Image (cartoon, rainbow, N blue to C red; front, side, top):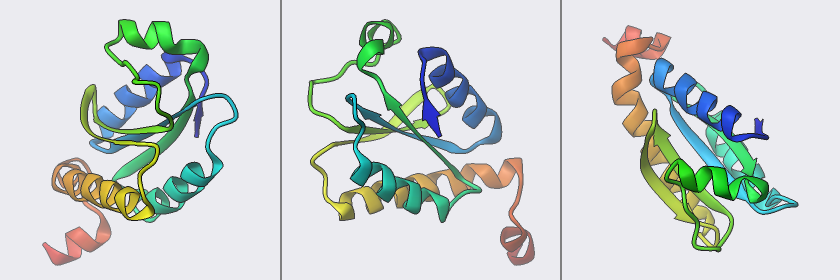
Length: 128
């Protein structure tokens, strides 16, 4: 979904922490980045049980975000994977599709190990 405030951003991180999912945030400048957004939406939808995807036009929120320890080099978009409050992976905007796929795949694998403890998927339960 779309995040429109730092409060929503914090809530999304908190929610993903409670469920054991990984939160993937695409930070963009005004106007967004449709290509990256569509690609990440598609990739993350394949792993809905382990990943949550959100995009954040963070231009008006840079000061608030920097107070929360999130700083940008000026190159957008930026994709960050969170495990609760902790940043565990990131990509700069000029990344290739293969880079995005690897980031999502790694986040899914990482979450799969942790999410099973929260709510086993039917496949995991059957395999167990």
